[in-house]
Length: 428
Ligand code: HEC
Ligand code: HEC
Image (cartoon, rainbow, N blue to C red; front, top):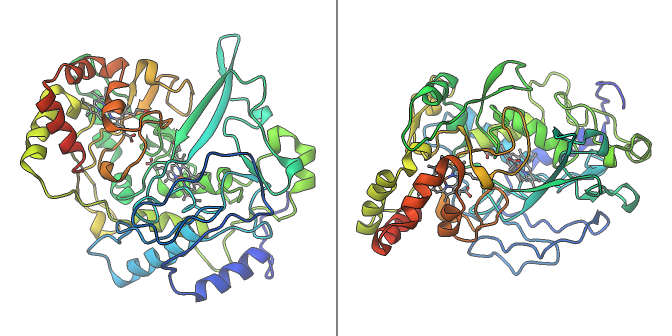
């Protein structure tokens, strides 16, 4: 571990300076560096249509998707923030620049790419934990709760420890429209949590401490609503997904908690993503700008079936949790101020019974999960937190706990009504 000092010839900054001179990359083919040791993995997912080229052995990720567009109504300066942020979101980290020593992938876009840079994918990450005398233990001394499945050299590889009794997969979520979600005031979510709902449905606001401001806010990002701000999530992802320490998460993950291994492996001064002299933003803030200014996926044109299905959605009670829209508060970015956000989520935690993932994280208990926003659903290829559902129909049938009554109503629908509901969901 070093100090927070930034050396003028710190390799990371040399790299960034040269990156910045390049215009926004339109097509980036990332082939996985062969020198980086990786655990055996399922075959790479195909990029969303149309594939720009046959996937090479690593994976081809093209920013050719149609949906990575900038919000409308931005100033020229904000559009520049979006373009600069995109460079960071696509940037492939190198070992010299701070990647690892243990990590899950080499860039943000490596997991977030369906429909364009920022999308979801079929890629999952793994969390592990155990019950110790009946109490949830995130196994931090074993390198938990998040597994980093790759390392810069084989001897640093992390594994799920045999002591783990809870193993949970987490599917990559989409980021389209994330700035609008961030701009929804806490007060709206707290008010919605306090409202009495039908069918025994409750809903809890996920109060958490934002790592950036240090203030308490309502979490709304991630399967457990574990973050309230995009900078906070980005800082966490820089450390935990790509192994780049930063001023909010300055301590590198030790492989399975082994500090001696970390000392051998980690040669780059921390924090690896630091503020350059005179700068107010580092890479994580730029990546957050990209996500904040990313437009939502526009819904498909309604059909008579999808319009019927929209009515069924409300009738059976889906809309109680999957709230059709929320409204943003005041933002310094005019395009995010006072906007209606058709996200189809209350952003609250619900006890989902058997569908819960068994993890305690922030305010979320074992069975509590955040209502997934359903906007952009038609671009998705896998559903639910662990990707267990390959179709929307299966995803609905897996609902349990607070959603059980509504789920049973869905199962009991006449086939034509169910088809209409699915047509509606497929138009989002
Ligand atoms: C190894 C794959 C992987 C990489 C690399 C990755 N992510 Fe993610 N991302 C995920 C997964 C999985 C989730 C869901 C995590 C959860 O809730 O536990 C997620 C969720 C998110 C969310 C929350 C979105 C929401 O509301 O649900 C944000 C924001 C995010 N990632 C940003 C980033 C940024 C920025 C980077 C690059 C620094 C990054 N991610 C790199 C897999 C990845
Ligand atoms: C009690 C609240 C609640 C109700 C009612 C509810 N859902 Fe959900 N829904 C959730 C939660 C929470 C998740 C995330 C589950 C998980 O963690 O895997 C979810 C996930 C989903 C997903 C998967 C999205 C993704 O990102 O993978 C779909 C599709 C979905 N719901 C549709 C519906 C439909 C259609 C109905 C009505 C028949 C419905 N839901 C009723 C809370 C609810």
